[in-house]
Structures are given as structure tokens and as C-alpha cells.
Length: 357
Image 1: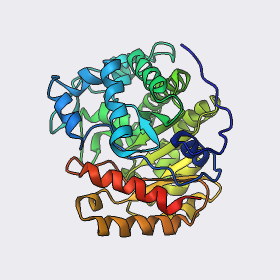
Image 2: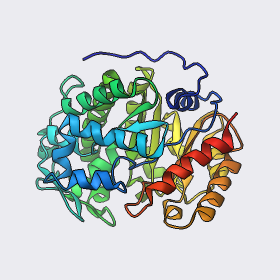
Image 3: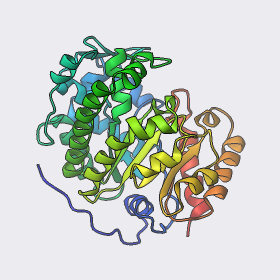
Image 4: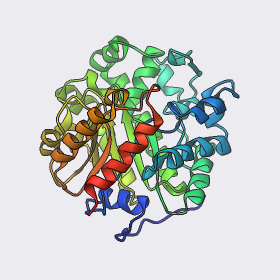
């Protein structure tokens, strides 16, 4: 597997330079933009391609198809970075989990983890063997972009992955996962330790394959309070970010419902903290520290309205960012399927125009 190095990004008017300068807390020529769940979701050409395959998992395991979908938003929206079309659950298969993605439900695990024996049986694939098809997709995308846009790799965070593994699928209250966390901490720590290693291996492998930046998705972390986060989650996130830091690539830390956790998340060591729409961006940035970058945080539902409403929301986010270095414009969560692709492109162009330096 070819390894890439990450030199300082010179000031240049390319999406990649713009994005990487922001990630490294340098002033870019304009505020960079990308959207979570931009690969697919609202694009008619994606839906047409998706109709030809039995499942999303089939598509993400095919590097040529994954790369094709990853590149769609570059042409459609003019974003500054391409995020790999993949899924946070993929490494769990290699750990020994029997899972499927069910339409309108999400990931379902048929052999949930409930005992120490279950945890002991889990494999920890190395960075050399983990999801090789994802690594091939990253290489294809990087070669196609030829340095014009940044490449974002990603993985699920241990808490969110552990919750799926224990619950057996999506949950509203995470009762079984939190019961293990609070009531059987020795089991919880054993599971989280293995997951931290798997996530770290995956992210390091993605950087070696050509990802410029990685994002760690902790979609369910808002279920915890700060004390629980610091005791049961933060040590494992620290391990992951420390491993990524050794590669030289910046890391983005994303979660939802995290208004109470921002300081604790910043302590875990990510370079950029992604802010959801439940907290104002300037308030959140002050709490995580202006020496750190932030990403966000337009409410995704604004994209279901008219351009004047969207533009007003955009201007509010930019006003709160106040031209500080280190801001990446994004939504507070993923693109909704009903979003008009034309409005996303208009938003990208408007952010670039409003912040051009």
C-alpha cells in the first residue's frame, strides 16, 4: 500500500488547498465547504445508480462504484472535498459481526455482543488487512481528483459502534449498551479497547491509502453526560486521535446532540470539532478553544426551504465564524434526501463568494 506524505499546503485557489489550510488552522483564500452525506442521498444520478444494485453494501464493497459515487458531488456541487462513499459498520464484519443494512431500519446485527466470551471472540484486523476495498476506493478517488479537492476518509467512533453491537441495531435509548457501560464496566472497557484499535487501524490505513483528512463519526454520543463521556469514552477517543496524529493528517470529531459535551470532546484531541445546529457556532467555538478548528453548522432542514431563508442561515453561520482561520462550512448533520441539489451548489458558491479573501 502506497503511503502519502502531507506537506504544508501553500496558499492556492484549489479546493484541496482551501480545505487543508482550514484544517491546519491557516487562513484559506475562502471558507471551504463540504456536506456530510453529500455522496448520494439527494442526487438523481445516485438514485439511478443505486437502483441497479441489491444493497448499498454491495456498492461500497466495489471500489469503482464507491469512487464513482464519491466523485458525484464534486461535479454537482463544487465542494472542496470528497468524502468516501462507505459505511461506518464495515470494519465490524471483519471483527466477526454478522450484519446487514435493512431499508428504512439501518444496520442490524444478528449476533449482538452481550458477554465477555462474545468480546473475546472479536478479531482486531490490522491496518494492513482492514477493508481493502475501501483503501482501493480512496486511491481511485485521489488519482481522479489529482489534488484539486481534498479526500476525506472516515470511521465510526467506538461508542456508536459498541452501541450497535450491543443493542443489535438502532435504538432510541441505548438501554442495553448503557447498562453494560454502567453495570459491567470491565466488559465495556474490553469492548471499547478492541474497537479503539480497529478504528485507529482503519483511519491510519485510509491515510496511507491517500485520505488527506479523516472524520470520526460518533452519531449516538449525545446519549451521555460529560462525566460518563470522560470515564467511558474519552480514553478511547484519545487513543484514536493520537494514532491519526502520527500520520500527519488532520482529524475531525463529529457527534450529534453534543452541546453538553463540547469541552470533553475537545479534550479527546481532534483537530476540528464538528458542531451540530443545536448550539450557536461562535459559542461552541469559544468553548472548544479558538486555537482549534470547527466545522458546521447550518441546520440541514433549511435546505428544504427557499434560497432567501438558506442565505440568511448561511450568513448567520459566517458572521459567527468571523473570518477566523479554521472554519469549515458544513451542515450540522447530513444532507436530507429531499434536498434540491441546485440549492446545495448555490450554497457552496455563495459561501465561497462571501468569504473570498
